[in-house]
Length: 307
Image 1 (spheres, rainbow, N blue to C red):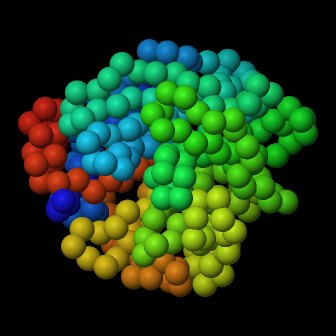
Image 2: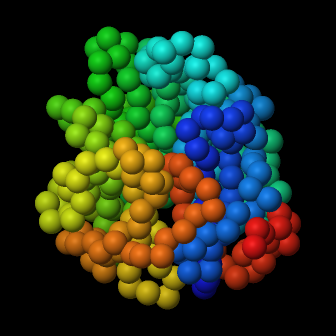
Image 3: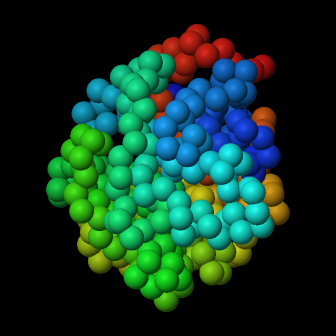
């Protein structure tokens, strides 16, 4: 399968309007300059749980026959803005479930599903993502949560396995550090799993590598963005037809949105920032997925593209 374009699934802004926390689509031919689909309006809207979704993650199924979309069940604008304690409350009283959609063509989507993945004493299953696990031969799903057992003191990354995105294994701690960790994103390349995670206390991203999803991960200390503060929500994708990877990181501290950093070797992690990255709006925590030309045309014909 030859991929020649890219799809960006994301949510918008910082909960300033009722529509910001839904799923939006944008496409690109080069992976840098993006155009909105559907007139810049949501493509998928949450009708379950809190009524809003954040951090949408899309992946192509292992057999290539369908696509899975998962997202955080969280509607800050609709539920958590009634007091100054909104963010504090959603991290202690938020949803234990994630939202799930399926599609065979990126245009026609299944009915939304709401599935609890976090433990009963957890709060807010935050920024869920998934990757195919070659060893387990199923999908490895991970997210961050605070839990009651330590008074909701620290964010940890949890994980579970699923074969169908309907039933999930019992959650367990996946990443725990002395500091809070969130926003993990994984990439499989050259037989290795590369893991980007936010040091929530330091507000920076670190990069690790392992032979398996649940193996021992080693930090890549030469990662150029190691210790650089002000970033969150990393996502990465291979550039079509090139031996380069683009790592996007959200410069949330300065409200700049995503900035792109290119590397030819993930095992070294040396990156160069790419100029000319443009989004029509402020994109927030999402996923870029390479797509075929046929898929690109289908999306544009179904939703229309902003010129």
